[in-house]
Length: 157
Image 1 (tube, rainbow, N blue to C red):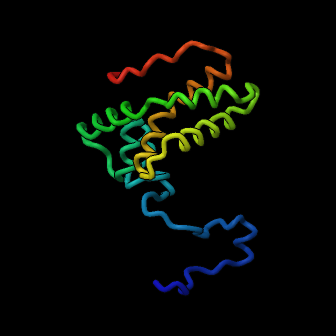
Image 2 (image 1 turned 30 degrees about the horizontal axis):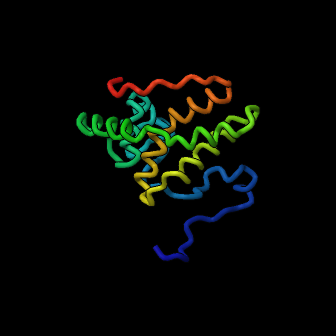
């Protein structure tokens, strides 16, 4: 396909319907059908909803569902990456308690990115994914004025 090939014609009727029926991009990993809805890597989203979050994370990175051994490995990898650097808590404690939770989350994510960037997109993404549950707990604990520590995750759970 050349860069100048005309793929479709947009008319004023399209504009009056919010461009309904006009493709605006392509995606190699997902598609939508009228009967089954969204598919990701060939799997209907409705089926993927039954899988463990770690298995879906594996799918997002590898474009296939994990074997039982791969599932065990990604759980172990995420558990090993879950520790949040101590400086994140001190940064969060400087924020106004009445700030919007999404602003807190944004600051937390940016702080994690600044403190421990590996310059490897996969490692950085895995670190962020692994730390999100603990970051959320930390944010809500600090915003609520609670000082108790969050117990360590149980890797067997």
